Length: 363
Ligand SMILES: [Fe+2]
Image 1 (cartoon, rainbow, N blue to C red):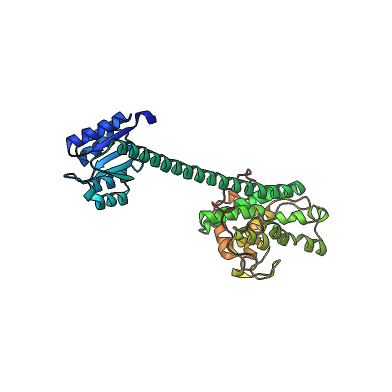
Image 2: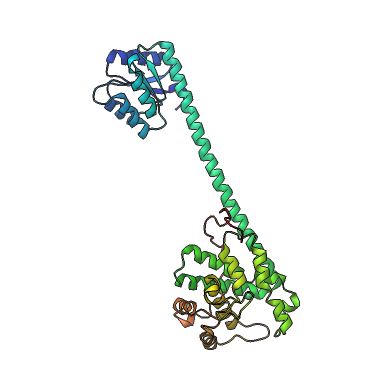
């Protein structure tokens, strides 16, 4: 609707006052409809697009204050101007409190009606513009938040790809460990958010191998003690690399740092035991060991499934958490499924706000 065909609604129980006011408004170029009561006004508002309502205050059935409240509730964008006798100023104030924009006193003067009409339209336009601005601003903020999440995931992905470029074995391994860990975490009853974090953590668990010398990382034979010590730096290196990126996801850092801890305290790097080892790390530790045993490396063949399961059983309670082992068996009841094939790379779903949440405390 263009501003030249603005529709006003005049509500007054006295016919002469209705026609005077509507004539004044029509003379000023506005389209005008009239109602003799609050009820009739509400019916007309349902059927017509009205921008401004001029309403008398003292009317039988529904008074002006009630009508203003109803219009405000149902059509918040309509500008309302109440018409009042000089003695009704207090009631007019009540109408303003209910959301009327303005009031004029009887008898209505032509110039005053025109001025109030223009003022009401101006105020209405400002309110609409302000609301649209707020909506656009919210849209912009949402867009920025999504972009931050994307950039964050791209950064994490770039780290994984840098490692894969050095050590092709890692790729399939990380993806399978992620798939095993995801099923175990879900079986343990973790929330969707915690399962998602476990998946990401499992894919990143060996990222610190970026800092391991190639001669050690790619050695096609068993490592000597010094080389093994060097390799085992990868947990601390990984945690250091990811810490600034993942301040809002400490579970992921926990996994990267603690996936070589053992339940009996004989693991690395912190010799944590039992419950001291974060549960996400206990999950990834089992998935990591199972996948390492059941896949071939250049210097050794894959262990048969039965032997790998026996080895896990043997180490349950010393290396592995019995609850996690139980969840692993429940998650993969069909042994013909094991070991799983390498899944395709999936775009990780992260709990909303991981990259955006304010960091509450330094780690
Ligand atoms: Fe590792």
